[in-house]
Length: 311
Image 1 (cartoon, rainbow, N blue to C red):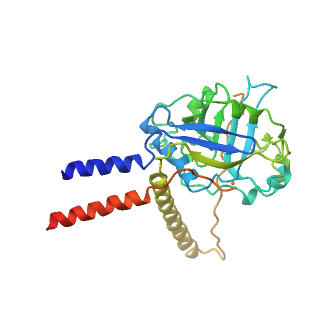
Image 2: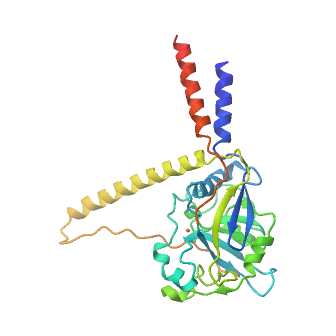
Image 3: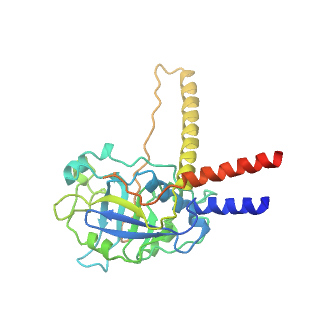
């Protein structure tokens, strides 16, 4: 009896940690698209899935900008990627938005590890970066640098596979993505003195001339919960912060004991998440109830069972 109860409880917890494929609906001011997470049910992709679920559940994509529509000639045949998830989207006037990017970056969670042994290669076989697949943006040469920024592949970008870009989701109906790709674009890289910065050279604009933003994200399965992914992300973030604080304290102690007349601790921001050239954050709306009561009830049931057994 006890074993069956524990097994049922474990199954309930598994369901509520997002360990199954889910569909996220991203709504923008020019339309919406549905993203199916982990369409192949590959356990290796779960950290990547949990990562984006945590960003959505914590509201980090709320009013975020669609900042890169990298295309080729008119049409869709040679389009490259549609990228978003790096920056918040206000003010929505392109030049004013670009001028404020320094304070508009989405606060990242701990990067996702796909290369545990550090050899520069992803540890498992993956889907290919073909049309409709979704991958995290990376710092060049670092498979373990993916955080909030992600991109939708517009064509056969399989050359990205060997560079550590791991598809973790699929968009089946690409019409809304193609619609965004056909919008007028603005190069605002010069506004911040970074002429040619790929994150800012192809910013799509809505019909009113303002940037495209994510206005809402919904989970289409009403039984889904953010509890597990958010808890894991926050725990990892806390551990990462503690490690960084310890390293800073050690550096400060070493600096104060040196002969230098003055010393300063400096933190350096990592390079912006990026992709190679094609040729080589309104408030989040989540239409799902959290299973707080269910989980609390489960814990209460465990306590009651333990009390009965003690008697």
